[in-house]
Length: 322
Picture 1: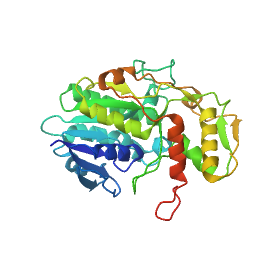
Picture 2: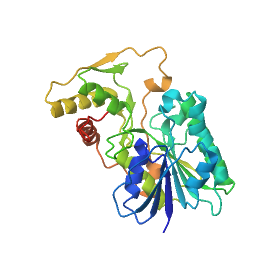
Picture 3: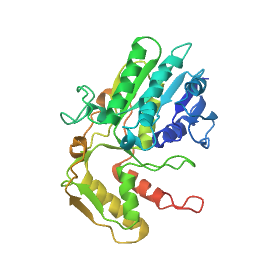
């Protein structure tokens, strides 16, 4: 029975992937910096708590793996990418990983970012565009992907990069990280009775995909990896939802759950420090990945927002979700 190891199993995407894999006939190893509760399911799960910036701990965590799902992210995400600690997590661990694996080259599926392309040169993007990342975070993500591709060409691993869109949704796993993205951030503001503000005129679009659909993409890649190995593949819904519409949907759903009036959605001038990518629309054509794997998003935006809002307003063990 194959051993699949998830690095970053306590993270927002990592915990969703771990839950999805728990339903499959495999051996599962869930690795994270903080203790996590094994997901429900028939799978044999081993939980490993480790600091993977320690090279020896990393080697032990991945030993004997047939496949490794790489979903590490420094605390604070893209906002702290300029720090040495963040670069060590976002890039350095990948450099170590391709050196510590041994035996038969394992499959390594990396969670990249669609934003690695930089300012989108067109709509939709499909992965064939030249990469010109403009932020430290995107530069680190691209560099880690390039390390994986080179190691694949050298025969050390069988690497696949799945570049993620704007991922949103709820996270029911006890002890796992909640979504810190734009949808949940606005839902929290609405729950607190605060207006939802948008930079610009609200027409900027984002390609939003629910976290469970992203997890399904990883399981699809694990099931049919051969044609994917060595490349990077974009995941997306292909809709390009306008943020003003998304925020109004969040406000309405929160009002329905709380019985209060919807908070206002207002447009404001973007700050001078706003990255250029924040002010440009992104729509993703994931046809290449879909054609190989048969994957497609199943959860609609309204359903995903409803579930996200419901999770935030549901107490967990007597405490409000934050």
